[in-house]
Image (cartoon, rainbow, N blue to C red):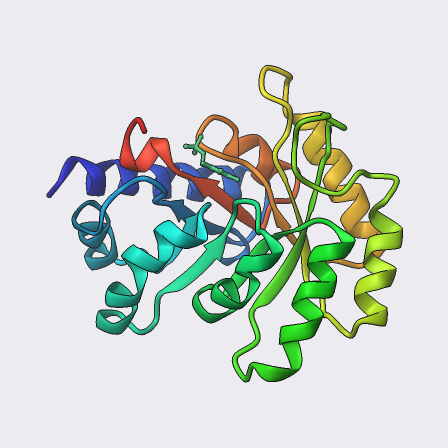
Length: 219
Ligand SMILES: *Cc1c(COP(=O)(O)O)cnc(C)c1O
């Protein structure tokens, strides 16, 4: 067994334990294995061990790595967890099953233009800039209602919310705020929690945790 697969198993057990501790059902929390910067040969042993859901943060890098793996393992599920430029929307819709980073009016416009032309429609989440950080992607908490209204007007279905709390702050208040926003807007899917804080995120209602370095090692 490779070191990566060993770490993957450890993380799976830890997710399971955190889910149980939170009084939730095991199948309520999905592990998104974040494989950005790692090569197909690092990723494939984890697929062979049974992992099916992966996260990537760049469209172009994903186009190089994933089509061949998807052909070999047709039930793979790919999440885009990095910023999406409007001029990459077509490529992203082709490759990804979930786009977690919808965050601005111009991106909604670009998605809406392609949406009617595609038969396999990815799931869309809105990324919230939960700590109101100037440099960070995501829609502001105050701007969220207007963005969701625009999505509705454009007939784009939004299924959940995603966030990355500010580095260095305790994450739990931010996770709790994302959960509150999800409840207010009727969303069941919450993507929050990474290698360092997935247990807290699960405690506060995460349905997807995005774990990279704790599985694949340092980038
Ligand atoms: C890289 C990344 C992760 C994984 O982070 P780790 O700390 O390596 O687990 C999760 N979410 C997003 C949006 C990322 O870019």
